[in-house]
Amino acid sequence: MEKLVVIGGGAAGMSASSRARRLKPQIEIEVFEATKMVSHAPCGIPYFVEGLFDDENLFMTYTPQFFIENRKINVRINTKVAEIDLSSRVVYAEGKDGRMKSEYDYLVISTGSKPKRLPSEGNDRVFYIHHPAEAVSLRQKLWSLNTIAIIGGGILGVEAAEALTQRGKKILLIHRGEYLLNKSLDQELGKLITERISRDVELRLGEGVTEIKQGGRLIITDKGKYEVDGTIIAIGVEPNVDLVKGKIQLGTTGAIKVDEYMRTNYREVYSAGDNTESVNIVTGRPYWVPFAPVANKMGYVAGSNIGGEPMKFPGVVNTQITKYKEYYIGRVGLQEEEAKKYGFHPVSATITGKTRARYYPGAKDIHVKVIADEETKRILGAQIVGEEEVLGRIDMMAAAIMKGFTIEDTFFIEMGYLPAISRVWDPVIVAIRKIMKD
Figure 1: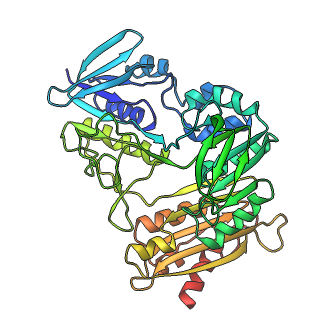
Figure 2: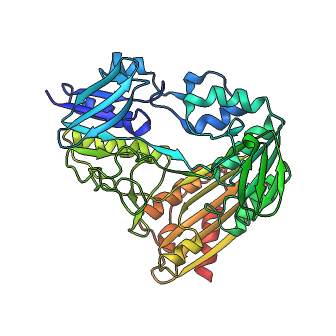
Figure 3: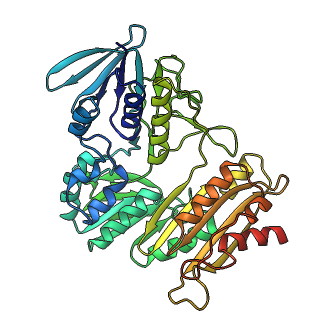
């Protein structure tokens, strides 16, 4: 009987094992998960910290017991893989029952990502927001503090600031960029959302942290010193490839290099999720996107190929969505400076429109930027900030970019119109028209 071993029970690992089970009912499947949770949702941690829900089991789509009983997948929680012997097709894991050995015919590596860290003098008040298994302890500690520093103004830093200001905490956010979310948004929209956040949060922009002292109670930057009760470090994540470094080929992004079938340089070894490199559909170059929808689909593709149903993963366009209070913030494709870096000649248009017909009450402002290539007229990227109807529009632009739509192709997308939720000339199409006119 064939056997599949999966290292990591997150989004990619459980998608791969579930898909393989559906296609090969007789295959033996064993999943090793280092924590107590599988099929979990790290993106929910800020909302747990905010207090929007209290049951940590809601982080899991399905419990370990569900997979064991309903899908006949042998899930071993609190069991960490310590070593892989690729030549013998064996993994060695350590858990409550001691060290164990498991042979495989197929292996899926889905070890995810890990937070980038900063050195600190003591760490009793230094926090990283990363895994749902740590969320209860994290929340208890953060709720006991009054003034909290957040280092990093990307998506996680912004979401943490929202959660903690909602709890009445005083937040100091230190960010090296000129404005928040600068790796997601260009200046036009980035400065707009920065101004909104500055109403609730003390911002220190253009500052780099040089030291963290007193266990996270003293932050020293290149411009000043700040005393706080604790510090959250949210400077990003990186592929968790410690287990395979020097054994399996890594790509230029530092993640595991795979082909379009999610295979590594070992034909029977697959990789999926945040530890895995992909291809940027816009540039055709290696790219790394640590987001759950991508991880799930990578796992699905790996499981399909292991199950004998060939499937290719097409690549990514880097679709992102987040929120701060009343604002939803979306982006997809390339930012303008990114486009220049990759050799495109970008043209862009930024507009502010309304979300509903002029006569329908409750219309909100919506801010749209669209970026295209001057030579090929191909859509390269889009950014949208508004109080409603952001996700649908950014998803539409993701599809357009993924399929290589030009400005004119996008102009002629037949969008739905209802006065209560849209305008007859949609704000995205208005931005497209502006590029066409220019």
